[in-house]
Every structure is written in structure tokens, then in C-alpha cells.
Image 1 (cartoon, rainbow, N blue to C red):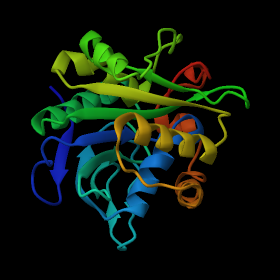
Image 2: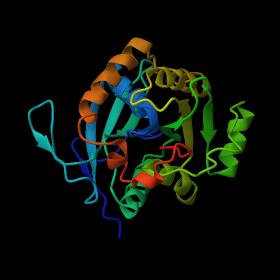
Image 3: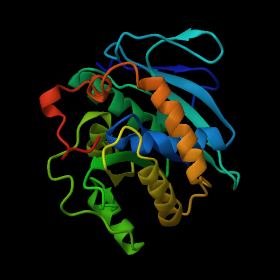
Length: 254
């Protein structure tokens, strides 16, 4: 039985037919910076929480002065062209493999119920300083063909060591639940907040999927600073990802 619970703050469902992005802290915090910058740049609101008993038992004080449970937030973002993007994001994920699997299934269920046109999983890959590639990965052969017809190159050799955490489970399970999902992975030096990689990722998404993110480098810098204030003093990245130290190889996408 899936122990994940969705707690709705507004409505009880997502807008239909939109794009969903998922990002949590990881290598270079690349995807998380992009999502947080979108939330800061455009009108947005938190419409729900994803709760699970295997999240770290750390309640946090919100900007409204109210304490809230450990969770992932479900946010809606109103983009400049009037379309609504949904973001699933937070500063943690479950500390167990079972918890990560269950949360991933619940994210995919949300995408299915809302008939999402695409679910983007944003992540980083530790690399050398002069490496600036964006890797695209998916688990569905038909979707891969569609992407390649649109001149989007899909990786054949990455991730060569696999993919861990909620991000890996969302992508790998998406084909079993019929959710069109794509991983967008930016190479990064692995610094705690790689603003340049986040900027590169946002511009790539805009061009490849014709989505008006409308972010700039100043926005991502400010977002990165806020993110590190939020998570920087609470322990290591591996603690938030719920992985053992020996598993945290630079060859993994997270």
C-alpha cells in the first residue's frame, strides 16, 4: 500500500493538460534553482503538499510564521503566455528506498490524473569545469522517437551508472503508468549552487520545448543564495537525498 498522502491547500486537483516539472536538491542544485527561480519570477501559489512518513522528521517554519510538516510542495506557476506550469519541489525526499518509490508513484499518479502533456525531471551531473552538455533521457521508446523527430537528441550512453532517488524512480516508472516523462540533466562542477548550469538548463528548456520561462542570470543567482540559506546549515546533500555516503557517486544523476 502506498503510504504517500496528498494534502490539498486549494482545489483538489491540478490544471489539466499542462507541463509538470519536478526538482529537489541534488548535484549543483541545478534543477531546484530553476524551479525556485520560476516561482520567484512568476505569479505562483502552493496548492498542495506531498506527505510521507519516511521524510526526515523535520518540521519547518514558513514565511507566514506557521510550522509545517516535512513535505514536497505542489505549486502552480502562471507563465508569461498565460499558461500554467505545475512544479513539484522541496528541500528533501524520503530517507528510504520504499519511500522514494512511493512518492514517485504518487507524482506520476498526479500527472496521469491531470492528463499532463509532459513531465520534466530536472537534475545535475557532476562533471569537469569545461563540460557544459545538457543530457536528455527517457524510458519510453515511442516518446524517444517523438523527441528525436523534433531534433532533440536523446542520450544513448548516460546515465552509465544509473539514476537514484525520486528523480530516477519517476523517470523509470513513467512508462509503466503511461506518463510522458523526460529527464533534463545539466553537467555541473558539482558546486553547492551552480548558477551557470541552472541558467544553461532554463535556456535549453525554453528553446527545446518552446516554454516561456523568461529567467535571467540575476534571477537564478538570487534564487541560489536563498536556497543555500534554506538547506545549507542542515547537513549534507546526501542526508536530504536519503542515500548512504558510499552510494553518492559523481556518476549518478540526482
